[in-house]
Amino acid sequence: MAKIKEAQDRIFKNIFVCKKCQTKVRSDPQKILKGKVKCRKCKKNAFRPLKKK
Ligand SMILES: [Zn+2]
Image (spheres, rainbow, N blue to C red):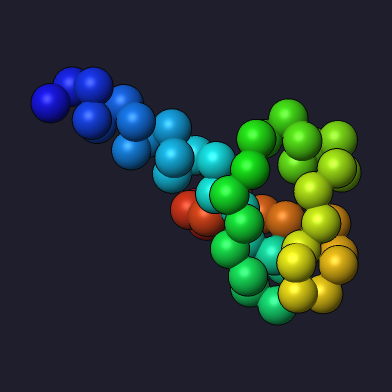
């Protein structure tokens, strides 16, 4: 069970939301930080983490 939880955590942490159109994109955080990931809808590269706090 622990393994499944770890996997879910990892998947969750790797999800980002486009600031413009709210599209969810799953990607490596390093790629997000480097601006290598583009939104597939609006082509922007401005993302925020899925969980906003
Ligand atoms: Zn977008």
